[in-house]
Length: 109
Image (cartoon, rainbow, N blue to C red; front, side, top):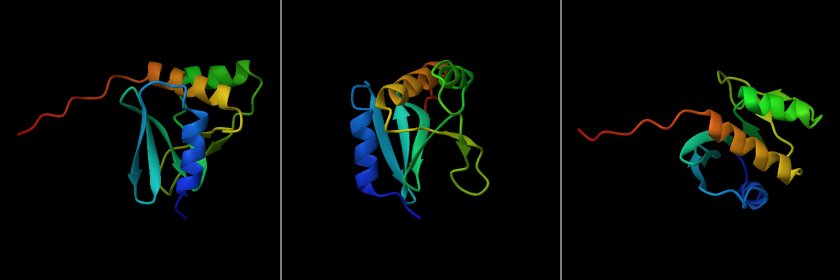
């Protein structure tokens, strides 16, 4: 099942205070970027984020449930974010982006 554009718009609205947030459509789903780093995506109308150590710590500190889901067969587990808690989601995305390495530069042949 592909994600709806309406759900993506809701996610982007909740995350709108973040700087340098973007997305890319991929096979009916949407990959989310923050500061040029892949932080997660919208899969089957669910916001799934990379499970970094800081994100897990942030969820535990907020007494939030730590739920994981698999976005598609063969993929690694990701954190299922409660998009209704926009402040927590923004904090998670910022934490994940801060922990991830800088994207590799693409060289043209």
